[in-house]
Image (tube, rainbow, N blue to C red; front, side):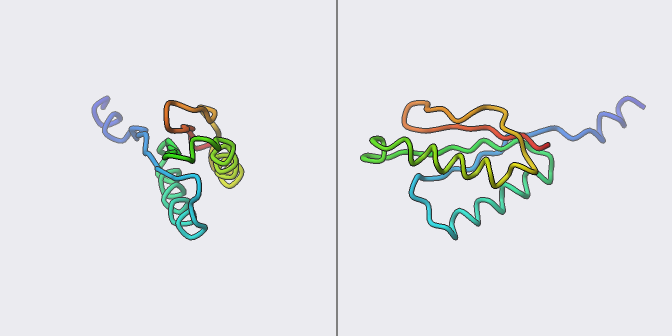
Length: 97
């Protein structure tokens, strides 16, 4: 009985979506679609924003993008780990509601 219950349980995985600060709209839409699929499956999503070279001088652009992600997924996900810089990348974790 317990083994069956364990078999039916969904193991929550942490999926990662990698973005760049100057991502194009269609590229963003493709990534957003993948994120929606992850949330539908009940997985958490780690959004990693990679900065390269001169982009490091403008972390506010990255913050703006992650804020947009937050707003776009407000109804399906909640922020579990607020956006913060870790070395050359900005990281945020979203969990399904």
